[in-house]
Image 1: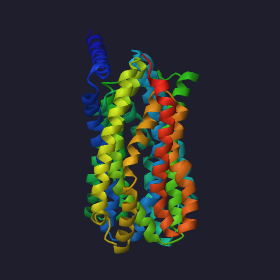
Image 2: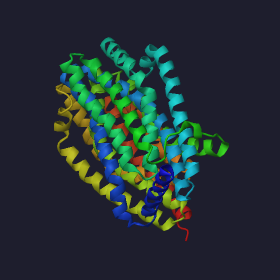
Image 3: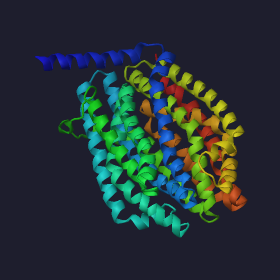
Image 4: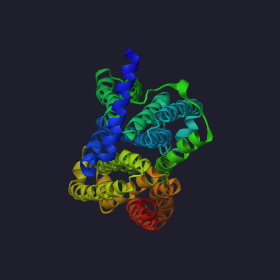
Length: 458
């Protein structure tokens, strides 16, 4: 009897959450859904900066560069998590919009199985081929860089299955409207990592390697907390997983834009490291630091956009197309205004921002120059990012894929070959700003041609 009442209460909670997303004023709803994700993104940026910051205290350029090299590999792993997390979460959100909670649970289980199985396979292969892998991702610019990259990666490899599980469950919770629980689980792992970094590195005198162990422990803690919190939402139950072509299609095709964007971004980072290695190690370190600084504004924008996603997907599933259109316009406008102010602040205080991450004068000088150039096109990223989210959440997977891969794939990678050949070292600095502008133009063309045809139904 108690179980029946518990299930009924859970169903009422799910239905109340669904109705809120379908009926509340759009702007206030966007604020509510985006605040937890923005906080999460801020912590994520700080989390990504933590290793760089504490390793920077060791005042070793090779160690700082190693963090950047391994981060490019970690980004590829995260891409797999986003693939299964976004794909399953997006499909679950639509099913909840249709009030089909049973199907949402089945899709959740499938997404988790795909993520964990992939994580185990990737971890085993990475361990076996660790030296060729470090060579591939640009860790061979110097002997010291190679040594530190291998040591750090050797620990990070163990965390891969835990990381994929966490990313998948977090995105399922977030896209189904329970942003708070998803962020709580993710933040538990991040805060654990941030607290453990100085303890393991300095208190226990583990040095550079301590940063890797802090990451591993943080991932495990995040998995535990997310699993506990999911029981009050869409409970994790592997036994409910049932495969069919439609479910697999929506998980793989629905998450493909996120995977492709993240994977190509990672490939671009690897290519960037390889290209920069032809000049000097300080450029790799400067690119690592400047990218983490600019990520502060970019990730806040992504957090704001992620608040739009459950509103978009659930209202689209409920055929409330006018609310989808309105939420898209508000999200883009507010995000762009924020990025304009961010660009001005980062441009003015570029040297100070880079200086918080390193004490190397040459790295600060190069990093500030890179950061200033990127500030010119930072405001364009808002429309680009939300356009991809829109197309993905309304089921236009191919268009979402084109927008997603354009910034780092269609434009940035070719520019990394063209611009350095023409302008030398300065061409490396120009590649990202030029790519940002071109991807913005492409997003305008795609949304202009298809958006009103797809959304304007009533």
